[in-house]
Image (cartoon, rainbow, N blue to C red; front, side, top):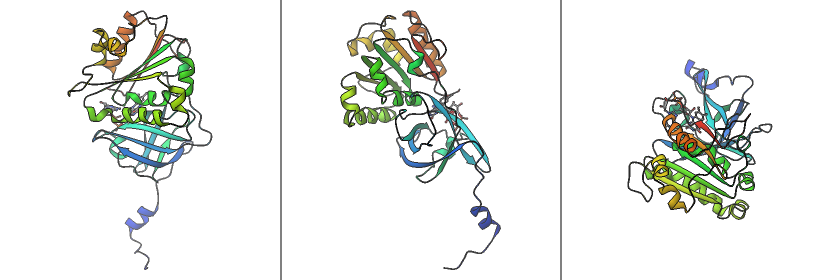
Length: 275
Ligand SMILES: Cc1cc2nc3c(=O)[nH]c(=O)nc-3n(C[C@H](O)[C@H](O)[C@H](O)COP(=O)(O)OP(=O)(O)OC[C@H]3O[C@@H](n4cnc5c(N)ncnc54)[C@H](O)[C@@H]3O)c2cc1C
């Protein structure tokens, strides 16, 4: 085959953008699109990269010759050999307008230090752990519900996931099915994990905002559990700013106190995105 003519275009195409120093450059292994707004991807995990289930990291792409980073919850558990992320697609988003087009073999950047408050260490001991999520806010809980430590520390784990449409719940349903069929997790998790999906804009078995379903008691009645009790219940919240505030208000009204990495408490919160 003849070598292509050495035009400027050819030279540019052959010179990949330089990866910045001090960041990981990982290879995309799999991509799954759920809706026109949501997808997940898995990528290689750097050998020295340690994190606690529930933490987030800064991930990015080279856009032109500049890296663009955004905060992303690591959706895979700490023991997994690969890293998984669950992502929104913002049509004109500086990162996700490009990230939504990644394919196996592409490179994704990741800064080296993970952090976050949605970790088991930030909670005082309890019996029942609630994970309240909306939209991509399920991502840190996708990590925690696949971590055996969650079930060592709690007798019962309740994952609520609220989206606009039923199609947006699919990632959550897939996670539950993966756990039920998993070689080791299935037995360890048993019937400790309860999934409570709700939608706000379509007919569905559970309809409405999670805060309304808590306030009117339907969540607890449906699950067959007593109302919130600071002696046994613990909470983690991940969603929009408004959802965090409303859920936090309900937990505080029930007597639960917010904690952090430095001062463990009865519930912890983290925004799923800024805006
Ligand atoms: C601690 C933390 C953890 C995060 N974890 C995730 C995650 O696991 N998955 C994920 O997709 N995003 C996550 N985000 C949001 C993420 O950092 C980016 O905002 C998102 O990827 C969009 O990037 P962008 O550059 O395309 O658009 P941006 O300029 O960052 O966002 C544009 C606008 O899109 C909306 N938006 C951004 N992210 C979301 C979202 N996740 N859901 C709904 N609307 C959104 C907001 O209105 C925002 O103002 C997290 C943010 C924080 C602070």
